[in-house]
Structures are given as C-alpha cells and as structure tokens.
Length: 275
Image 1 (spheres, rainbow, N blue to C red):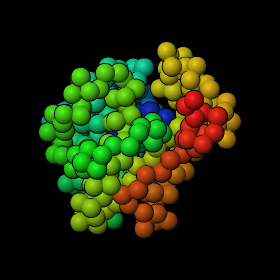
Image 2: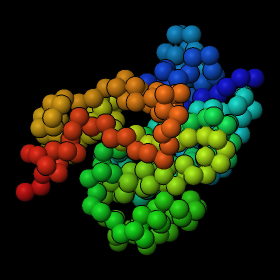
Image 3: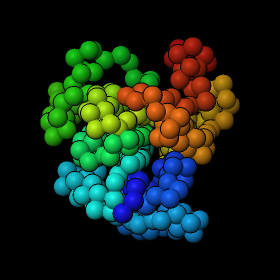
C-alpha cells in the first residue's frame, strides 16, 4: 500500500492539480455520477497514472465518510483535492448552500480525521467569495467554526436571508476560505496542511454554463475589462495547486489564493467597480 490522492469532483480543475501531484501515487477520482468519474479517469490512466473511481455525494455525511474510509483502505491519504460544486446558473440557493458550503465542511471534517502526517489538501473556492461585502466578526466565526451538521441552521443562511443563487454562491465560497482557515489548525495537529484556491473565470464546462447563462453578459464583461484581458485555464490553477500541495509550499496553510486575472482588483479599483 502506498500514498493516495483523493480528487473530489471529476472536473478539469481537480484533474489539472492531480496531474501535477500524483505521480507514483494512487488516485481516487470521485464524483456524484459514476459515469463522469469513469470518463475522467481514462485520461490519467492512459498517461500512466494509477487510478480508481468512486461515487460521492458531498452533501451527505454518510457518503463523505464512506469515501474517506474507502481511500484509507487503499493506503495513506496524503492529498485531498476538493473541487466539487455547483454554480449560480446550475442550482437553487438551497442546493448551492448544501453542496458548496455544507459539503465542503463535511469533506474537511471527514478527511481532516484521516489525512496522513505530511499530507495536504486544496479546496477550490471562487473569486465570488472576495466580492461579497464584509460580514460581521460573529458571522465570520460562525461560518468558520460551526459544526458542519449545524451549519445550514445558521440564521444568516435561512431562505428569507439568502434569496438568490449568486448570493448563496458568494456566501458559500467566502465560507470555504474561512472554514479552511479554521480547519488548518486541526489539520496541523495531524502534521498536515490545507488551503483554498479562489479561481476567477477558468474555461471549464461549468464556466461555459455561466457564460451562456443569464449572467453571461456580466461574465464576458469581466473577461474583457480585467487586467489580464482573458479567462484562465485549468492548468494555471493546477500550477498553484501543485505549489500548495508540494514541498515548496510546506510553510503555507490556512491561506486563500486568488487567481482571477485581476477581476477582483478591477471590481474594487477599476472599470468593473459598481457605479
């Protein structure tokens, strides 16, 4: 039995990170849909990686726990790449909070219980979390530290407070970075590290849904007016993930890395600023 890397979410970003950190290790590629996991596994398997697949519903404690147990049966879990989620154009506010916020908290708790010493994790958040207005210190603490199974009962997350999908998404992604900051303390007790990456518009099937969805015009405007003048690629996120999960990132934990081509900078100080 050797080292195991668990990739949750069979999308392009998770795969891009996995390609950089999984040589000589067993990759468990998990997705809500077995067909998605199997299809994604073909590429790394044909490139010489040792890959198996699994299904997981991150919004289910039982399912997340079962995945963690299955991974430890294969070896020492030295890496976790959590890239599963739904976007504002794909789901209701309730579904976004259940998958992107509660699901991430479950993954951090379950894998924080079994991550191997020297291991590391990366959670994919979003630039959207950076564009949410400031929360109170009490709200920040609640998102960071409320036990996962009590998280969705917070008053700030009730339907009368979160009425649209974009607001739910921003709250979930802000919550991800706060949660990782708190979990980094617990993971550190096992000799492990965990960080978030907050990508901007990265060209993936999910991003294409957004670009062709009801908010597509706004997304295209972000690309046009940001300092980089383009969207990003999964491999560029993979480069940051490799830093955070590898030896060069050994002093980095509990941090969030914004990689958005300067969209957030333009939102606060440039042409994307609200009038």
